[in-house]
Image 1: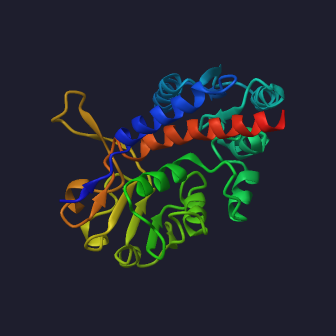
Image 2: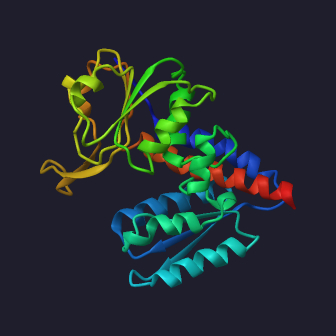
Amino acid sequence: MPLVLDGKKLALELAEELKVKVFGLFQRPKLAIVMVGDNAASELYVRNKLVYAERVGISAELIRLDKSASQHKIFGTVAELNENDSVHGIIVQAPLPDRSCQERIFDTILAEKDVDGFSATNIGRLCNGQRDCLIACTPLGILTLLAKNNINLAGRHVVIIGRGRIVGRPLSILLSQKFENCNATVTLCHSESRNLAEIARTADVLIAATGQPKFVTKDMVKEGAVLVDVGISSVRDDTCPSGSRLCGDIDFDDVYHICSAITPVPGGVGPMTVAMLMRNTLQAYEKFALRT
């Protein structure tokens, strides 16, 4: 039986650790969440972040902007938060209705407040091996989930399917660094990769971040591999009362009998992403406190 990597359980355990740390601080760290529009998935993600923040004692403010908000309005909102010393972490919830300005908005957030770890500055620092930079939450959550389950990546072959800037690319950089539990040999695959199934079968650890439900099947998995599923999609299922259910990029039932460990969807990587956001907010606060 493979080990099911329970991110929900671990996130709750980490919440208790964070709560103790926050309780001992001079003031509560503050996270500002800027949300543009009313994307249904974003509403769920933001709600989970607010609930977790309350659990650990971090003050979280949700700033809602209409989906028709101009770029000037969004940039202005971020600029005000950058100048506000009572705000220690800032995120702009993706995706934005107008994605053409998304990258520039991420880069507008001060690096020391960029708790999503999306800015060019923090990605550049990660490339340079600066362990104390703010690391993108999902990659950091994956690393933490593996490490807490005693899965050390040093010297192992990690194949990542998906090169997106939020998960795939920063994850490939992180896992190849000379950091604790990293030092992996990393192959980053994408839509133009040839012989993808053949490459995937060489992986000791296979990470799927494609956004395509059940993309990874047993013919792509080596016996005994560790499988990490980043994707979450809603698929039709007439057996469910709602008519649909959530599933990941990995066909869980198809690969379950041949892997050594696997993350479930939901309850795997998602809760760890939220936990790392709060950890990054605490880190940003601690650095701010040292400067003042």
